[in-house]
Image (cartoon, rainbow over all chains, first blue to last red; front, side):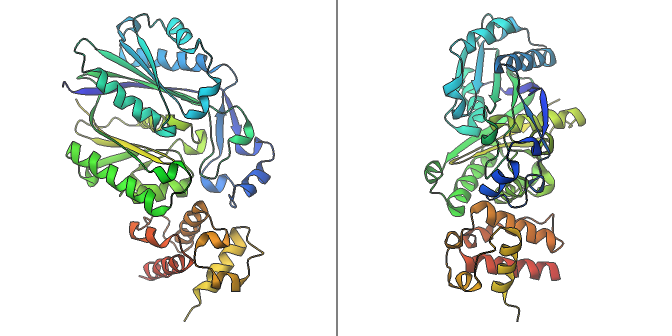
Length: 302
Length: 87
């Protein structure tokens, strides 16, 4: 199969910026969830909230991706959405049609990848690469979105949830080359019966597969764009995966918190704003969720 | 020789809202869940301890993970961190 690459990384954030203390009964929720040091102690300062329907943010992110990538809307063959499971029950039935119409994606075939919680966007990436088995396919647009409706649900024992959309396009021979992908499931984690050992097992086995498939040594990885879990948990997870904290990119954690399956791409966008990595640079992208772990190696090309 | 159970008890009482936890209860406990220490609590405890001992950028040693589910395991990890900090 031809080399596939990702480019045109973009984001559309919830328009309302809020301090973590603005969450009603913030202190009581933190105590109840066992977050004794409070959210600031966990690395979170602010988060974004969507005040308009999610479709408007999705369309905005798509427009930015098309502009950044130079791909015409009418040249997009497939549109692969991803979101976490909780959003399925309140997605409007005309969601896809509205996005296609407002984005001018007149030829794109939509599909939604979910059921892998915050790992879903990497599942979407895997689905996208399989679509290129059809030689006629030129561009696949990836759009991940996540948001929370009830404020009280934002604070969880492992992360603070914010609202965001991220997107990019997969094209033959352009962008950050997709060198490998892997996902693992820890069934005990799906039922809340996991422990440190079972979590470590799925991370280590998946990481080994990703590194081997791409011929990458862990020391070759320049940065690891990962899930914006609370900082100590992110550090812990990185250590389990063999990543030194200095290579961990959770730069958007303090300002954006954990935006479900969008995080790795949010951190890529942030990194690209400030850096221009030379060809040959290798990045690791990761997503963690209860019961799931996924990752991929991306290589920068000229 | 320093009694690490006393040390852990002080940390839990001070930082983890476990002021009602008795030292004898901690000594008798085998699994962390018996004293109400969650996964997040364990990770936080170790991360905070690394920072307090001047090792904020140190990695969690993956070998510690098998120790994280038991009180004895946590005590062992605290000892190892102190040894690292002393070097």
